[in-house]
Length: 88
Ligand SMILES: [Zn+2]
Picture 1 (cartoon, helix red, strand yellow):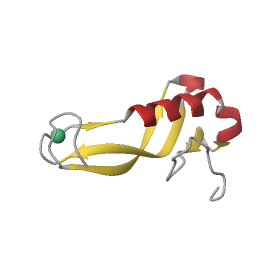
Picture 2 (cartoon, rainbow, N blue to C red; picture 1 turned 30 degrees about the vertical axis):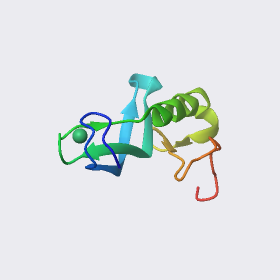
Picture 3 (cartoon, rainbow, N blue to C red; picture 1 turned 90 degrees about the vertical axis):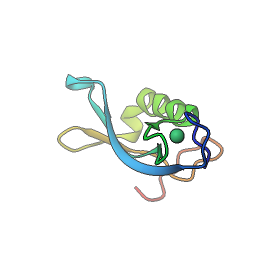
């Protein structure tokens, strides 16, 4: 895919685990899609992904399941903004 930073077609989606917040507000989200570019070396979240993360944070009690820290799994293959629970 085209990299938003440098414009080359060197962007690849990677799925990573990211943590947000700290202390008791710490939320870990797995399978967050980030765009990683092999041309410019940048990796970034798309606006759509950031929007979804905000939504997960707002509804963290519904999405998160307790481990040592709350962990939510990012919805994969999202197109319409609906979060799938099918593989939870
Ligand atoms: Zn790039």
